[in-house]
Length: 145
Length: 145
Length: 145
Image 1 (cartoon, each protein chain N blue to C red):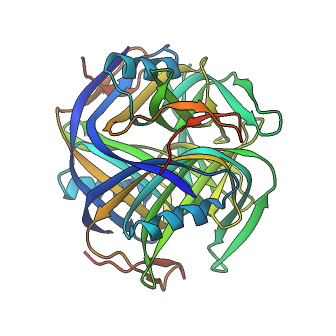
Image 2 (cartoon, one colour):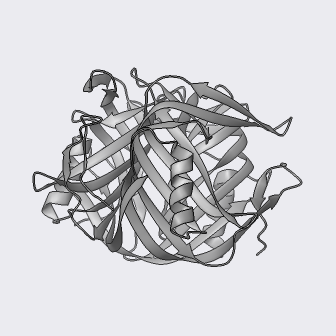
């Protein structure tokens, strides 16, 4: 069963992130500065190195790892909602190295931008607030149909 | 040459899928229950195991395979249209394991949800109905410009 | 810091690309023929072979490579803007082979379509024109906040 809510497109932005910044921090910063509490982002570009996470479904802990090489961002996709009243960006990323080999995971702080072009859409709608989920120990939306 | 039709954004939903469900079935179910015949979906999250397919372009048959481990969904992307009068979700998925290694393919039934956050947009527009395509033996949209 | 501009959704198209065409050329052609200067595209499908590029962040040159096998497109994502006054599609692609192994990179001419279903959205907004970027030697948008 799915729990979902109707939202409405509010504003649409297109832009780029600057060289050398932290990918997750920069996106979160855009949301904070523009008062965006709900929405989605997609991006492509390249990173100087990546720090990703894999959620261990047995121990219920994120395992962080670094891919210490320059990589293309073949796709970043993320949603924007609230946690403890502040905008939080939950993004997953797919990357590829010079031979085309692909990597991916949950985007963590520590991923350094080389170049990044994004489209960000803010939504109007109900509050999507993250809270502790018993089953997975993840911080999921506490919505009910 | 491209065959395409103009469509219009109708409704936008944001939500999550429940632990333990079948990923493709759950999305298809949302479409059926909400009378969605046309649209798009994007999602991220994690699965307990994945069942994917690769279309063999020579034999014209889908080859199914299982990745029997927990994986991050780095991206699910799909479109919604009609086949035999019923909503059908055509989705492709990119996944990554604990070392960041990425996998992907055509999403098949048998992929088990750990957690999944999605954005689904329904469209108004002409009927997109799938039918047999001579060239590829795939079930493609029978649209003409 | 991010440089971004507000844009507005203008038209939305859903369609398919024909067997045997060049993936990047076909998308660019749609933009030219429909006078689309700004927007986004997403697609899934399959290719007969892929020609991708990786941007070498040290030498500041694209390194092209071919994956000479049939592959699923697990995701194509791209943006549309202007370069020298003409529409240019900047797309990255994620692919997977018969064992599910994923590949990716910057989409280059030479990628041959097997089947491809896309959603293309045109935007109204300021001019996004690509120009030489000192820091990366890439052709990036010359926008300022």
